[in-house]
Length: 445
Image (cartoon, rainbow, N blue to C red; front, side, top):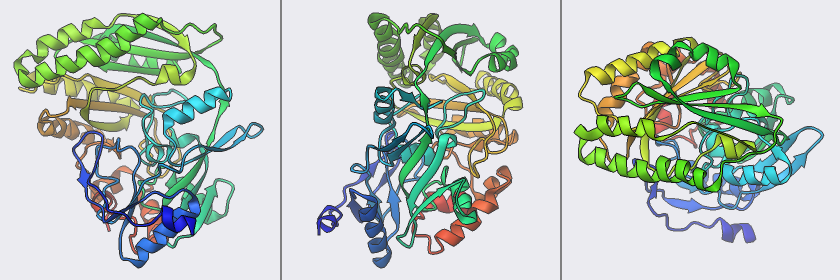
C-alpha cells in the first residue's frame, strides 16, 4: 500500500525550533501525503502508546510542538485545494507555508485581509498559536478562518465551521487557536478578498509623542504599529492604509538598504557587539534608532505587511487590554531605565480588535500587543521576568508561541472561556494523545 510506505516509521533525528531554545527527540517521524495517511498515523500512534504532535517550521519559542512520541511533519500537505470566488474563500493544506500561500493568492488576484510581519510559518502552526499582525478593524490570521478540517484522537476526520452542528461549532470556536490540543489540522479555509494596495508610511517619532497620540494614531489608521528603542526616547512608526494606487513599491536599492542592510545586516553586527560588550548597547541603540529614515511606498498586502527577519532572537509577547497599553509600555521603559539591563532589540507594539475565538489572545476584548526581544545567546530571563510581572499586573495574556511562564491556574483567570476549551479537550482527547509538557502546563491535565 502506498500510504504504508510513505508513512512508515523511520529513525527520528533531534528536532530544534527556529530560535534553538527547544529540542526534542521523537520516537519516530511521519510525513503523510494526505489526510487519510495522517489519520492512519494517528491511529497507529495510539495503538503503540505514543503521543502525537505536528510540527511546522518551528517558529514558536515555546515547546508547543515538542514530543517524545510521533512527530508529524506536514511537508507533503501543501498547496491550495480549492478557490471559491463566489464565497470569497480559499481552502489550503495545513502544511503550506504562509509565504507560498501569499504568493499563490496574489497570482490569483486574491489576498488575506491582514497578516503578521513574518510569513515563514505553516498555515496550521501560525493559526494554532494565534499569530497576528496589527489592525484597527481586522484581526488575527485565525480570525480569518471560515472552516477547518482536522484528524481527531480516534483517527476520524472532522470538518467544522460556524454552519455545522452544535459540536462542530464548538470545535470551530476553539480549534482556530487550538494549540495542537484538539487534533491535527489537515486543511484550513480562509476568507479572502480581491487583492488590494496598501500605502505604508514609516516615520521616526519620539516616545512621548507616540504614547500621547496612541489612541488617535490607532483610530486614524487601518494598521498602526511602532517600535520603541530602549535606552532612547526614539520610536519608528508604521501606518498601513488601503490605497487607490497607483502601485509605488520601494526602489530596489532603497529597499535593500532599509530591509536588508540596516534591518538585518547592520543590526546583526550591532546585536553581536552589544552581546559581547553590554555597556555599548545604549550608544548603539541611539545610533540604530536614528538610522531608519521616513519613507512611503504602495504595494500589494504581503509585500507591505511582511518583512525579512534574519537576525535570530528570543521573544516574549503579551496581549493587554488596549486601554492599558501606554501605561504598561511606560512601566517597561521605567524598568529598563532604573535597572542594569542592556536591551539591544526594539520593543514592538501592535493592536487587534476583539474576536470570538475561545483562546485567542484578543478573545472578547480590544487588545494591544507588547513584544520584547533579545538577541539569541543573550541572557534573557531577568528582562523577560521583569516585563512579565508588569504585563500580568495588567491582566496580560501571553502569546501561545512565545516565551512565558504562565500556567493553567493563571490562564483560567485570564480567559473567561478557558473552561469551555478544556471541557472540549476532555471530550475530543480524553486519553491526551496530543499532550506534551507545554500543554500540561498551560491547560492542566
